[in-house]
Image (cartoon, rainbow over all chains, first blue to last red):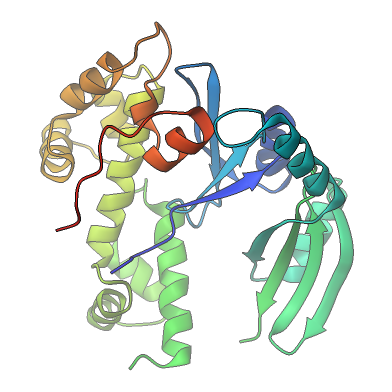
Length: 137
Length: 145
């Protein structure tokens, strides 16, 4: 039985800038930040209330996974906003939205009532979108 | 089957534990936070997540300790303190039971795998990432039992 999701990859354009965004703006914690053999940086962050699920902040670069051309295409798509990180749960969408907005986080939709709750849509500093959702109780 | 309102309450408790797992564990506190009795909270939590609240907290603490052993040069005593244990011996025995080796052995073994000075071995990150992102070759594929 699969018990849980523990790592999810988020393609980012710059790991330092992404780290600053996810920790200082969204309030995530650093999981791992280390340079492994070959000089690659393994960087993960997690939400304080969910330490077992880590977002792997990875820069698409030429290497075993991507050709130079593929890496450039992925980076262009990230910047365009073609990819999403997922849904971040909050117990107060309006309050969290106001806090994040004050920190300079970009939103494409303010808190809006949906049938499943209240949802705002934002973007990280690479261009990945995310949903900020307060579920209906 | 667990009811929706119960699921929400138990998730609240789980979030609370995940945020406070480095502090001292109190079933009374988390049950109260979820507006449930201790017995009921413990029973529903185990039924919902497949592990008891205590096991959940211990797992998070050991995982945190593993990370600290890799990334920091803290002493075992300091790591023990950082992950919410007051006794090094109970931390070490719990760690050994869970991981299969003592904290010191774990740190030494992992660091010895690196071929480059002051660099972490690729084995310290999940194999799928090491393979796809960094080009680590699979050592061989074992058949699923």
